[in-house]
Amino acid sequence: MYKYNKLTPFKLCVLKSFPFIEADFDALTNYELMCIMKEHINNLTKNNNILVKNIDELNSWFDSLDVQEEVNNKLDEMASSGELTELITEYLNVKSLLCFDTVANLKEATNLISGSFVMTYGYHFIDDGGKALYKIRNILNTDVVDEATIVSLSDTNLIAELITTEVNVMNFGCYGDGIHLDDIYISKAINYAKSNNMKLTSPSGKIYLISETMEIDKLYVDFNNSTIITNDPIDMISIDSVGYYGCIENLTIDMNSVANVGINIINGRKKEIKNITINNLTKVGLKYSNGYEVNVHNCHINGNINSQDSIGLELNHGDSHFSDIILIDCNIAVKTGSYLNYLTRIHAWILNYQNLPNSKFVDIYGKCILFLNQCYSDTYKYTIYQEEITSGNDNPQIFIDQLSVYFNESIYSQNHYPSDPYILHLQNNNQTQNIRIIDSFIKGNPASGITTYFSNLTEYYGLLEGNIYSTLSIDNKSSLKNILNGLNVLANEVKKSSNVVNINILFSYDSSQISGTKNIGVLDYFYRPTSAINSNAIITNNQYNTNPESYELAYMYIDNNNVQVKLPSGTGTKYVHINITYII
Image (cartoon, rainbow, N blue to C red; front, side):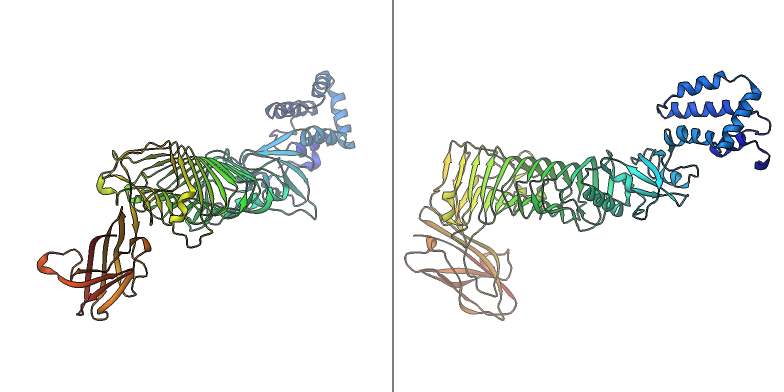
């Protein structure tokens, strides 16, 4: 240990200003120490690419000092008066830049002075994406030490303040390794960006594990092709802002087959979502609940083999545009039923046959105005599916231009298709005149034919113009209504071709509780016979066994709209098979 009381004033000044210089202070002259100090200053400014004002003049002055005694006396005089300390402080601690590997190293430093600047090469580790510039200053009563924008130091009178024009989540403590939970750090970054109206950013290639919703609201967010992933059933990103504007881009959202919603637009106005990939959804990829002028484009939304109940885009509000979006293995690619929306160049296709049953390219559940332009439905059971609407004022208006419909029989065997696919499946006849399909085409033929289904119709009243259709037929299908309580309906299909009606019904009942002549259901108006029909139903004890030796006949009667069957009593479950054809 040095004996400070034996050092000259100059040597003591050098030791305090440059504690990292390892030298025998007693053996060196003031001039030799001055040369060492000069070399350190030169290296420091050179390594940090910092321009020190008048450094050439300082070097020239060093070189001109050739009188040893004069040098020693002058340096002692400057050290005693404090002039040398001021000079070193000006050039070393204010105009130079000290560098540290991590924030932890910065916090441990003991040679920091208010007014100086420091840089870290990472937050937790070197090159972890958290490289940042800080200013060292005295702490104020108003400072909130969050170890991100305000970092505490070993000198409790000082803090390091982050200097930035945009918010990098890695500067707030994120690990981005997909292992450590990053919720608390992302939340800090989001709140700081909101408070200071800054852009939220991330380095490229990071993976952020979250367990809580990221509430983006009206921020501009660029994740630079990084990923967020979760292990919890959460909405991963939410937008709920009455304020205008905001953007999310360049992000992969891995729902990990557990999350509820990838992006939930609870309230969005003039928002932009672009270059987003949503993977492994089993519920909803993007949900739009309220707002206007939302633009979603250049996105990928991907399900997996377990996505039988998934929805790619759920549009419950409108006045927005969705374009250039690819959806893979979303059981329902687009579900909508309110307001006006534009869908342009939407390409959706089923990759895994497990997602084929009941799959829909566009599912329309209510009143809306929908424009589809240059869209592509690939291997869906239903291309346009109109759910039954009870209110006559809720008729949707669907305008379809240049729709491509493809059924890929080269990938899936016919056994994988649950039944013949449908181009249009419309439940209410008063809605068909509000659907237009022009300049479109169908390709592929996975089963016996491609069917267009209009409930209660003998012809289509909408506009089918300039379309190329292959083996297209009209299948008017309905079902028995108001089924008797206590019946377990296994099949319920009423079809009409021209004036020929076919009824195919299968149900089971508990013969110990239900028996006798029962009105099992009613027919829609368009399927009612002009005169009463007497026939028989087949009753079996096994759903799949209808051999003559194993069934009994039951009297069946159709009077106008009522279908009545005399159900025999007994013990256990019985199955009733009705298959009858008649002319109206």
